[in-house]
Amino acid sequence: MYFFSTRLNWRYLRPSLPMSRFLRWRNLIVVIIALVLPVGCWLTWCVHVSLDAEKTHQSYIRVLEALTGFVEENNGRWPRGWDELARFALGRDPSKYARFNDLRELRRRVEIRFDVTANEVAQMDTEGFSAVKPIGANYGDDAARIEGLKRAAVRTRKEGTRKRG
Image 1: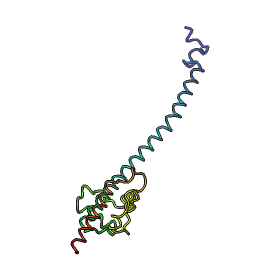
Image 2: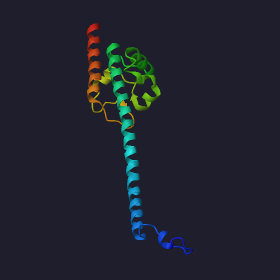
Image 3: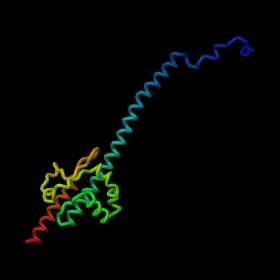
Image 4: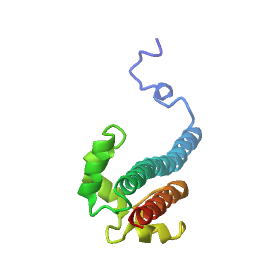
């Protein structure tokens, strides 16, 4: 009946771990949280940037493909603006060019110079290509599609001079 005595038994009130061991565990937990939290935040940021870059890359590819088709089907003429290019792309293949339904988002991700002609585009260097540029986080220029656009501009320019002559 020692347990039920009126005196307070301190033995039952102590933590199961000695205080020094308790402090070691607490410090370990604090260190783990201090390391895991920044790494977790950094990984979240990396994933966000990567997903944003992928969206920009996909928009950039669709714009280059739409421009190539536009130049081919319009005898080497460069589009006058986003609306004209969007009408062409959506009329050609609405499922493939669904990104053209949201022109504001597309303009935020891809810059097109509408002040150039297809002849000027054909003469641009692939590495310094400035007619179409991705904006923000991206995977860089798509050299193969840029070359395809330049070939389309050259081909239609040559066909146009043959038809006139």
